[in-house]
Image (cartoon, rainbow, N blue to C red; front, side, top):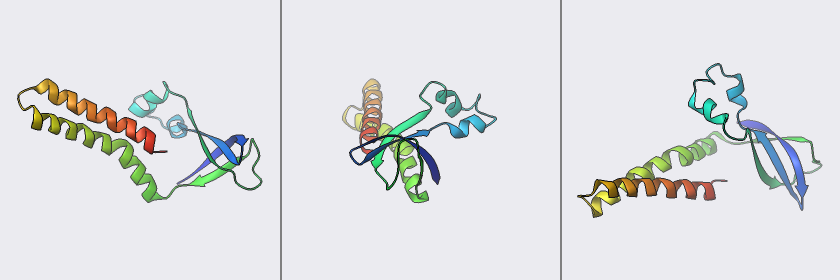
Amino acid sequence: MKEKFEVIKIDNEIMTLRVNRSGGCNSCSAGSSCGTGILANYFDHYSVFNKPLQNKVVVGDFVTLEISSSELFWRAFQLYILPLIALFAGSAIGMWYFPENEIVHIGFGFSGFIVSLLLTKYFVK
């Protein structure tokens, strides 16, 4: 998968890149009824991140970066499946230690989900 990024800042051999996140949602006819399309309206339509400076790149240039299919699959797994696994694992831990209290099961499940989201945000860059 290839994507074009705009260079918006260069500082100490680091370039700051910006990419439009909802490019596909603008061209899709189901955008008004799709969950992703609806959520895209409430958040920034671009992402900003840093990469090492490439040769002869200046602010305003567009650079193309590519991600392999296996890397894309792994990142999608981390973002979507691992939090669900943590939700069920947290609930299972709650059931193991407190079998009579359903509220504790829900609390453990919710806690596992939130912790996995925070860890994903920290580790997936």
